[in-house]
Image (cartoon, rainbow, N blue to C red):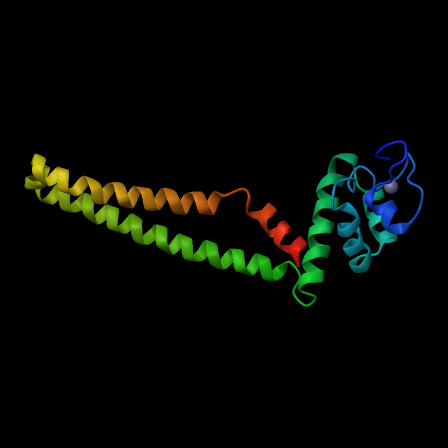
Length: 164
Ligand SMILES: [Zn+2]
């Protein structure tokens, strides 16, 4: 139960009184919980999710509830593929970014070999010319790494699903 007079999102959706023993209350008491639980109920059924949560150790229930809500929202958005289409899209992005990283790493390795094979490149004027190119390559690798490692990607996907 979220407060003296407030029910969790699941109980609001199910139009029932939320009690201290409510299995959903710890995991469906946030702003859009009622909407999310509506999708959970349509896709999995409230009773099945209740049984699922009851069977799990308490420490694993939060992850399970988030996963069930995410999968339900994805299934509402894409009834055929559900979250698989998102996973496939993310895998494609990763593959493209890995290819870009490989290309840039090869360019950097070739440049390093060029510098080793051509000592005249170490003269100050040539170093001055080559540094901006290396910096831009390093910046590109950093940029791709940031995109790849961006931990907000899941939150953004959830927001996208909410908006549909
Ligand atoms: Zn409740």
